[in-house]
Amino acid sequence: MNAGLAVLAGLLACSSGEPAELDSDREPVQTVEDFTLVQSIAGNRSWRLVSDLAVYTEGDSLLILSGVDLTFFEEDIPTTMLRGDSGRVELRSGLMRIWGEVIADTDDGRHLETEEIIWDDSLETFHSDCLVVMTIPDSAGSTLLSGRGVDLDTGLGAVAGVDIEDEFTAVYSGELELD
Image (cartoon, rainbow, N blue to C red; front, side, top):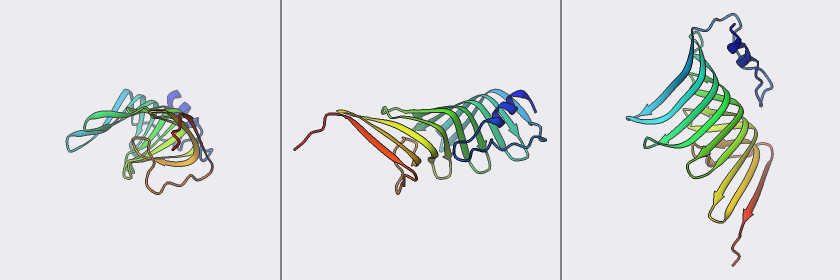
């Protein structure tokens, strides 16, 4: 196993505490620097994944990534940018797990920080069992939200029927209008 693959495989997941699963006997089929993967629907980009280094194993259609940038688009315009230290893409299932120092920003000023987040391409949602800290600005101030076990859409908004699985805190700073 090469050094880059060994480092990526040894990183721990927030939710399970287990290292990323890799078969130590399987050699990478390809190692690509400055890797890019784009998904388009009806001629418009849906998302673009860029990585400093990608290791692909054909047997399980798995990409292991180092230095991850994931950009989501609406009408081919970037709306949400997510960065993380490492990632794993299961090409068959459409699941992307990004971990390390994960930071996401939207075009309307929302900001998210966590240790791990999973993108489910079929549901078009993010999920994290880790502590998630989000800042949501408005015209009079901002709200700081933190919680574990959250589901979010690509704009870092709540998905219908979201349950905070563990704990939740909200702090608002700004002016409140009282009638």
